[in-house]
Structure formats: structure tokens, C-alpha cells
Image (cartoon, rainbow, N blue to C red):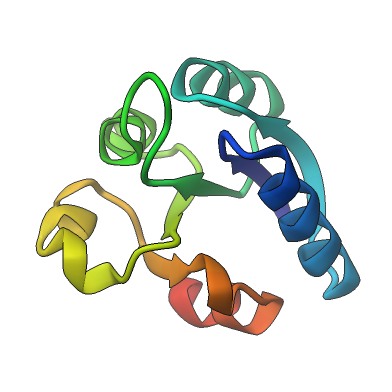
Length: 115
């Protein structure tokens, strides 16, 4: 399964890449903001976009909505250092498959959201 990581913190992108690759995912790209994430998703065609909620340009909910708007795009899983409860119905309304807290990121957690 191919993954694009979209997060404005290089340290988190590196950690997420290491975790997911160690658990069998193929991380095919990274992006530091929503604009780059949308561009990379269009160019790379990942199966999954791991998408931070808080980005410096668009928030992750807007990016998720744009990625999933017409169907046929990548599956989106949102992530944040905050708890999912802080976002109420926004995760579901964005078109994302679900949410994984950054502190709990693992291949198993990502797979559980996608099942």
C-alpha cells in the first residue's frame, strides 16, 4: 500500500515514514503543506494520504475534502497531536476514512482505520 505523508513538521514526517516502512507500507512521498499535498497526491497517486489536521495553509479537513470530493482519489486518514474528540464531526464531514492520533501511529492503527 502506497502512502503520502502530509505534515508541516519534518521530524514527524521522518518518524511516520520510518514507522510505516518498517511495517510494510511504501511511503512514496511527503509534503509540508496542503498545496504541496494536493499536488503530490495528483502526481504520485498514493493509495493513502496520512494528513495532518493543522497545516500552515489549508487545514487538513479542507485538503481531505478536496482529495475525496469526486471519488476515485486516495483514501485519507487524518492525524493530529490533539485528540479526535477535539474535532467533533469534522473528521467524518471531510471525507476522510478516519483519524489516528500521532502518538498512536502504527501500521496496525492505520490498517484498522482503513478496514
